Image 1 (cartoon, helix red, strand yellow):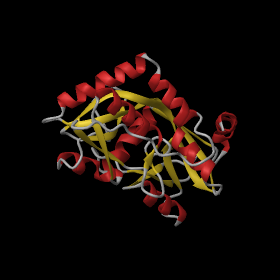
Image 2 (image 1 turned 30 degrees about the vertical axis):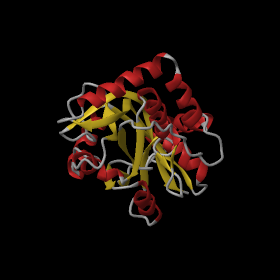
Image 3 (image 1 turned 90 degrees about the horizontal axis):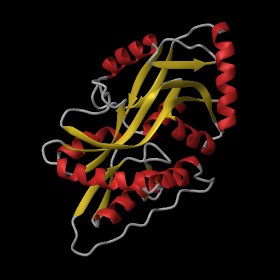
Length: 273
């Protein structure tokens, strides 16, 4: 797959200038700090400034972005022709390509690093955020985090992702964490509703280090903010665009983030063959 991406990127750079421009619709998961129109303006500015670079063999430009509340809804939109492509982080796109022979790469978008982090309620979650940060720092220092990334993201194998086992601590606090399953193999929920994959493995390790019980809740991606604000969940996964940048498309007010634990610089646009 890595070799395929390199070949595609080279071919895209060679042929992009010769192709005719055409508008196209691109599906992506709903961003929780911007409306669809605001995100369109944000991405137009990012592309024109060079913050994002889009390589495509068809030079399809401009792109009109369409929000979907879940990966399932986004795939249905692609299959029904509501959108021409769907936009996914590189590891997620590779998983989709490996598990669905009807998909192919339409384009590669390159940007500065984007991060995955845990989100907490600003009003009462700072203490829990600090505990998660302490665990993440230790996992980075002893290479546990790198090992989990290698096992679950870089070399996940070809078989189904197995459920992750959680330690149980009698009488310990329980932390409720919302998972969406919308970014396999990172945030993944199996067909039987069992969470698995990279995020789940990280949570199991954090629970073990903090000696707390982790309770997983399955929600749609677009429901993350309401699940956190209502107290249904204590922790939710969030995107962070370049640490320190003022505008965060996916992080609404009232949310504070942990340290990052996963980063990437490429999005792949996936289309039907």
